[in-house]
Length: 360
Ligand code: AMP
Image (cartoon, rainbow, N blue to C red; front, side):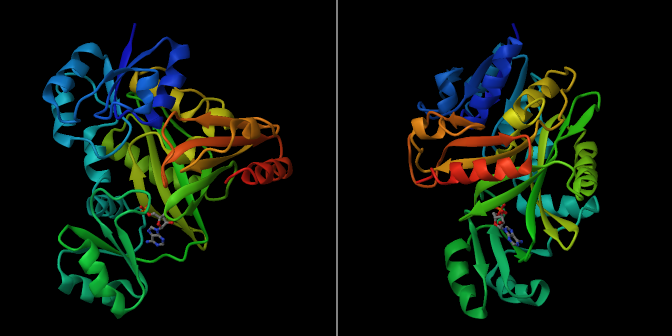
């Protein structure tokens, strides 16, 4: 029996386990939270991410270890990788969780990005608009997610306040991109280099949190997005699912960030693709043949943030697939999602309209 270790026990770990049980896999999650929602269905090591005893236990009990979010112990992960295969490669985590390293990597691989500069002092911040223009964003290099740790600076009057809020830690300034669309591409690579890509996702954020992701099979920017993701896969000798988030500006793509893991913008693949991102991530890290990423009709996913609609409501409309994560409701927290699927875009639109009407 193969046991997969997962560092982090949230909904991504939970959906990995749900995809892995039909393949006969077992799961062991490491998460310091006794209420971690993946622990409802996986064996659970309840310990800090850098707990050396818990990491040793993962190495002993698992054939392979993966991770489901970025804010884990990089040192712990690197040590673990000397004892058991760890995928995606820890180097991908190291670069992706520092926005400056990540943008410099994109630049070195000729993947276009918004203009950016490091900001280490109030002086740097005052100087930033000369390089970035107005308005611009200032973001923490580390520990930012879902729009946290960033400020939009519209005029010189905003600079002091932004520094008071974010100063004292390493920052990055970025030009504000008035994009037409936000897109992401999910790529999967196995240890032999077998590589597959999902159809592009078109993503809508609200208050910095993903609200909706739609599959866009046949999108004209597919090839360009795949080319950029492919450069990253090759650079890291990557194994697993990689998500690359992009802004579309007049037919060009600018890279915003990458995530070395399964990704919220790919949840629609559970019902909207031949093989889900979760199953393909497991296939990749276990060196199994990757599954087809062909779309199954058209799909759109809507996140349930903070509160869940009544189950009896979301189970009613045709073509809606509900996922409840088993987490306590709390403002701003992702507690579930639903994917709507249809054979054509017109039907998808009307089903999506019904689903959105159910949201609180
Ligand atoms: P991030 O945490 O960097 O993914 O940012 C969260 C959201 O803020 C993104 O999904 C975008 O909607 C927006 N955003 C981030 N960076 C930029 C940028 N340089 N220009 C315009 N919008 C941005």
